Each structure stands twice: as C-alpha cells, then as structure tokens.
Length: 125
Image 1 (cartoon, helix red, strand yellow):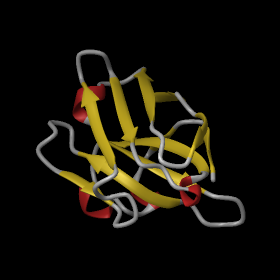
Image 2: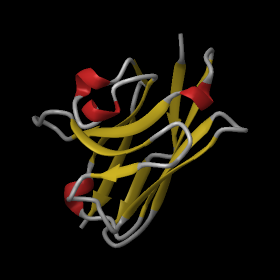
Image 3: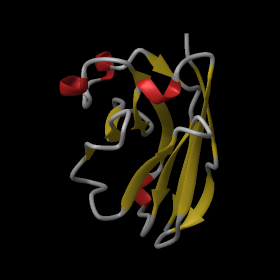
Image 4: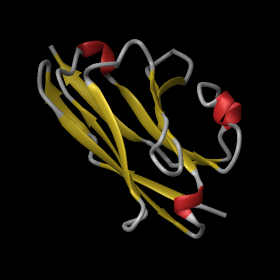
C-alpha cells in the first residue's frame, strides 16, 4: 500500500511558476510509475503528466506540454511537477498518482492504483 501526499499548491499570477511535490511512503516507490492529474471546478479529472519507474518514458497532455515538467527522485521517494508560464485555465486541484502496472492506460483515472488527497493551484489573471 502506497500513501501519497502532495504539497506546493497555492495562488500565483498568470505567467508565474509553481512546483508541486508528492511524497510517497509505505511501498516501493522506485517500482511504480507516477503521474499527475487535475480537476477544475465542474469538470472531470484529467491527465496532466506521467513518468515510468526509471524515468525512461514521460508523457504530457497537450495542454501542458512545453510548460510543465514531471520528474522524480527515487532516493527521496518524491515526485515533482514544475509548472511554468501558468495560465488561468491551469486552476484546479492537482492530484498525484502511482501504479505498478498499466503504463498504456496512463491517461485514464482507472489506470492508477494510488492517489494523493490533492493540492489546490489557483492562477489569477
């Protein structure tokens, strides 16, 4: 069983940057693919980014490609989401997720076994 805890959310002006962190415990973090999703008010949760256990494969949604960077530090059991050039439409609750299998389903909520509680990101225009 893996527990995930996000941090780093907050309020930032459009064009600014934030870095989210997700600390893992209770499992073998280095064996899991990890990812980020987000959910804006009255919208469905959507895929943002994901990285395999060894960092060999990374994927981003089109809406964040070129602005966001996902990374992981297996020695610290932590993953990150660096968000640059933030836009008002990036406002959402951001969730980290982990899974040991199913990379082909990385863009689907059902493809992930473990979830954090979420952290709010608000971008003011």
